[in-house]
Each structure stands twice: as C-alpha cells, then as structure tokens.
View 1 (spheres, one colour):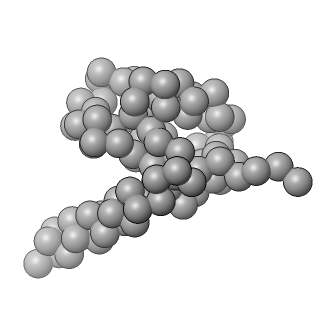
View 2 (tube, rainbow, N blue to C red; view 1 turned 120 degrees about the horizontal axis):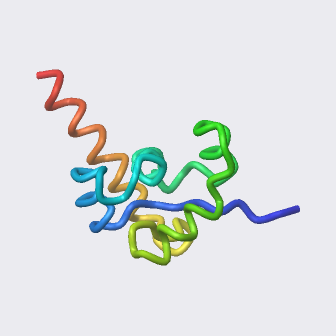
Length: 90
C-alpha cells in the first residue's frame, strides 16, 4: 500500500495566491486546493491531471509543505478559510 502524500500551504504560498501571474495558472490552482488534508491523488482527480510532480516542484520552491510534517498548518489553513467565509457573509 502506498503512502498518501498531503501538502499544506506555506506563508509564501499565501503571498503567491495574491499574484497568480507569478506562479502560473496550474500552480495557482494547486495552491488554492492544497489544504493539508487532500492527498495528491485527490488533488489530481479534482484538477483533472496528475499534479504529483508540480506539488514536489512547489515544495522545492517553498510554497508547499508536507502536511504529515506540519499538520498544524493544515488546521490553521482551514480555520482561516472558515473565518474568511464568515467575514464575507456578514
């Protein structure tokens, strides 16, 4: 059985999300979807292509972290997203 690889955003990724032209469309979309809970296989299904190599490239650039090594970041990611949704709906 293979290990599930999960990736979470780094602070640099949050900055890159504000400038999609700097990372490219595919990378921007992957950064949006990476939340530390979705596996690379799930992300690939959602995006309609294999994104394993792209995820590794983004990790090497400091935009993604292995979620198994940094699970707390994934939880913060979800909390920030929920907070943003609440603020937007108020």
